[in-house]
Length: 467
Image 1 (cartoon, one colour):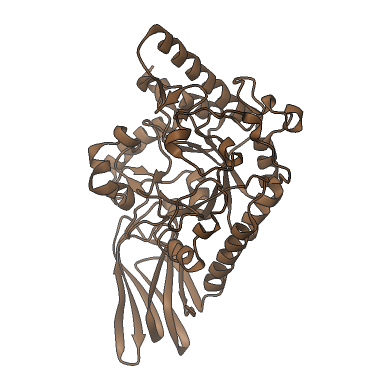
Image 2 (cartoon, rainbow, N blue to C red; image 1 turned 120 degrees about the horizontal axis):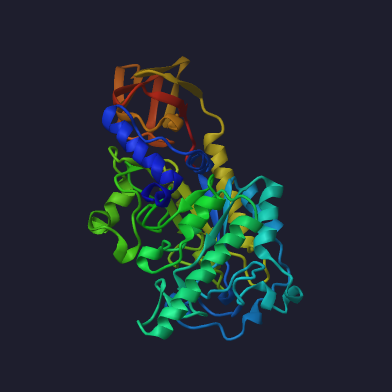
C-alpha cells in the first residue's frame, strides 16, 4: 500500500537514494521534463484574472477575500492568443504558462465541475475557452505550454490559504465540496486539453493530509511526463527565494528535501536566512530540483503581475532585464517573466516592444562566440590563432548525466603568462561569467573536483560590447 500511495516518481526517488548510498559518485539525474525546462531558459507566466477588466489597481489582499461583483466585466474586444504567443516566440521564449485560475476563483476554460467558468459569460455566448486557445497558439508557434492552477485562494468559494474558515459541519461540508470540485477541474484540464509541459499550483497544493484536494495523484495518472510544481510531497523545480528574477552564485540544481513547502509549511532550514537554501541549493542534495527565478515584467519599482491602467512606467528597462538574465540563466536557473494581457485581450504594445528588445539583446550577445569547445575530462582548452580580447565565458555541463563538477578554475594565457580569470564551483546547465577585457591566446578550463568524469557540453568565449 505504501508503494502504491507514493506514486511512480517517489518510487524512483527511493531507488535513487538506495543507489546513491552504494555509489558515492552518483548524482541526481533530471527527468526529461526537467531537462526541457532548463534547456528552455526563458519562460513567460501569462497572468489573467477578472480584475484585469475592472479598471482599478490590483489589490491582492482585497482580491483574496472579496468576490468580483460582476464576472461579465470580462469582455476583451481584441482578444488574440496568437498575438500573446507570437510576441513571446519572437523574443526567444520557449515556454508559456497560462493562469487558468487565480485568486478570484474564476476558471478560463469550459468546465463541468465549477459553475464559475467561461460558460457563465455573455462573452462569445458562453462558448469561449481561453485555455484551449492558449494551448492551440502554443502548438502553432512551437512553444511548450504550461498551466497555472490557483487552488490556494478562491474568493468566490471563500477559500483562504487552502481552507474554508471554521470547523463547523457546514465548513467541513463546504471544504469537501471544494476539494472534490478542484480534483474534477484538474482532471478536466489534464484529460481534455492534452499534454502539458509543466503544471504550476499557486503557492503549493496542499493534499488530503493537510485537508486539501488530492491533485498529485490526478497529475501522476494523467500527466506522467509533465513537470510538477508543487506540493509538500513533490516539487520538480523550486522557487528561487525571491521575485527579483535573480539568484546568487552558486545556485545548485540539487536540493536536500523532496519539496520545499509554502509559507508556514516550509521547513525552518528552508525559510531561515531569507530562504537562502532555496536560492543556493545544495551540491550534496539527494533530489534534482533546479531553481527558477521569477519576476513580473512590470516590476520596476512597482510589482504588477496583472495588467493595470497607466502602469507602463513599471516595465523593466532593458539594462535591468539583461542583468536579470545574467543572474538567472547565467546562474543555472530558468528566468520566468510575468506578462499580462490588457483589458482589450492583447499584450500591450509597450510590453511586446520591450520583450523583443530584450530577446534581441540576448541574441546579439551570445549568438556568435569567438570559439567553443566541448568534451569529457578534467581539462578543456581553447587555443586561438591570434591573441584576442575576451570579456565573457559561458560554461555548460551535460546535465542529462547530472551536475558533476564541484570545483573549477578558468585561466587565460596573456602576453605576461597565465592568469586566473575565475575560481568557481557550480556550472550546472549554464554559468556565465563577465570580466574586464583580457587579451589571450588560449583559455583553459580546469576541473579540480567532480563526482565522476566532468561532461562539458559547451565552453565558449566571447568579447561583448557592453555599449
